[in-house]
Length: 129
Image 1: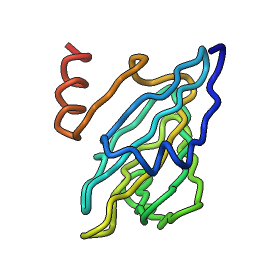
Image 2: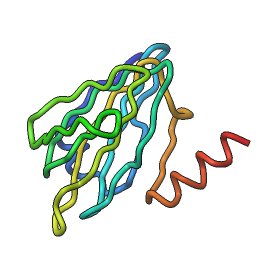
Image 3: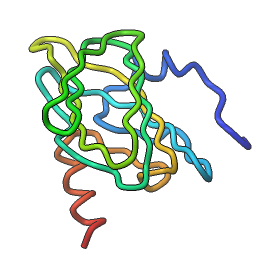
Image 4: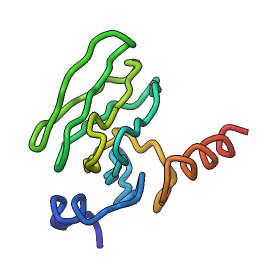
């Protein structure tokens, strides 16, 4: 297929992996994510990548530059500009947080699947060595 066509809501809600790349184009990448109760992505920054998030299930705390906090819930969208430190935290202690994100340009190798946050951390450490 030349592009991506699909029910992003259904794919996001059915995903239980920490990170799964659905499609990688030249200038954008579509990724579904699932954070376990209380889990967080961890404070990170992408120097040359803008990131769009949409929450499909649950509530997330978005922390920008370590101090600016925003609560986002089902149906909300968040954009993190390149160069902004950010963390995404699942505020629920019982429910999974399900979201999708679009990186522009792509940020992960095509077809990346990280079943858990630990898998993601291992892969990212390997990419940077």
